[in-house]
Length: 534
Image 1 (cartoon, rainbow, N blue to C red):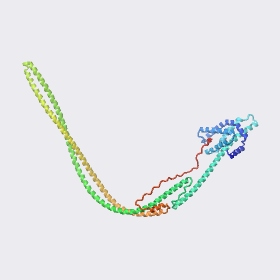
Image 2 (cartoon, rainbow, N blue to C red; image 1 turned 30 degrees about the horizontal axis):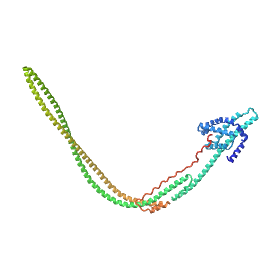
Image 3 (cartoon, rainbow, N blue to C red; image 1 turned 135 degrees about the vertical axis):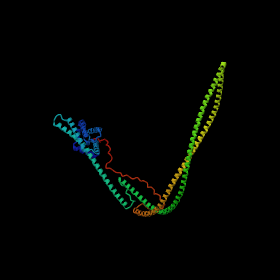
Image 4 (cartoon, one colour; image 1 turned 30 degrees about the vertical axis):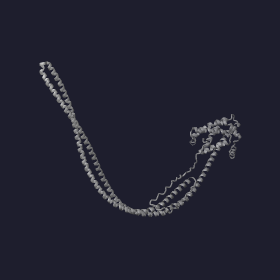
């Protein structure tokens, strides 16, 4: 604490009468203050919770508990009555924090009134004289006076620092406003001069780049815009010269185009005549392909009928082969019957010989039956041989008929392929005929377009002359602006080119954004002793 602060504290203590005796009385009352400060703070925070203006300064009950703990500690320092530099620093911190939080003095003073109410009641209760003597009442009055003076001293420092902080903030805001107004005045003068030069056509003038705050960004943006405008007008000047050269070339090209248009018209007439001849030939080809397609279709139908007949023949031969197999089976049965009959006749002859004279007639019959069985067996054998030969011939016939069927199928496939090829030829001929008709139509259209082009060439020539006049007017207008010498010298020194190269692209420059400065500053940091609690 410096000398001024020491003198200020001494003056306060002397003026309100907090002398050595009064401070000693405070030390004597410290137990009573310690007993009464808790209930007094409880009453105060209950009132603070109920009031909407003071409730917003506390986030929750834990916040209130922390604030109460610090208040009790601070009242312990007040009761110690050691009013030195640490005391002044602590109470000054309270005032500055209250100013930053926006806690008005009325709530602070009201809080002290509630706390004093509780403390005075506690002191009176603890220190009330047992006898109603004048000396006892005087002592109590002195003690209460010391408590009130200590509270008012604490309140004085907190409110004074609060008001000093507000005054300092006000002066700082006024200084910042004055600085901003001066910067704005200088910026307006600079921009006014720059706009005046721009109005007179001087594109080389720039706004000063050392303007403060957001005006510096505005100056940079303005200079970028003027530079871009100067570059664009420079390119316009070059383009005007290029257009003038191009108009001369357009005039020469128009004459050349007129001659080529006449040649193209003659070539188109010859092309149309040739296309007509080709179209007739294609149409004849398409007709012949149609006839060939009809003939191939008829051959395909006949081949399909032959295939059906061969199929039926193969089926009939298969049935004959099956019948031969069945006849062979029947002959086998007959041969078996003949063999059995022969055995029976042989047995009958043996039995007739045993019978003697009585069986002679039966023996003759058995002999005849045996002869018939042998002839049946021989006949069945011959028939079986013939049937085997017939079956072999039938199998050979089936193979030949099958081969004929396969040949007919191959012939049918060839005819079908030929029919497909002829169909493709006919379709292609028709498509070519249609395409040639379209080509012929396009050629006629090209002939019309060529005639229109001839008319457009005349219009182009007239438009080029008008454009030359407008270009000259534009060139005179650009002379109003004061451009960099390189733009005009480049134009005057550049040789006429048939297709002038495009000017190099200008590198993009980042446009500086305007920075706005608000009236408020950064949020104040919490005090070292966390005196943001009320």
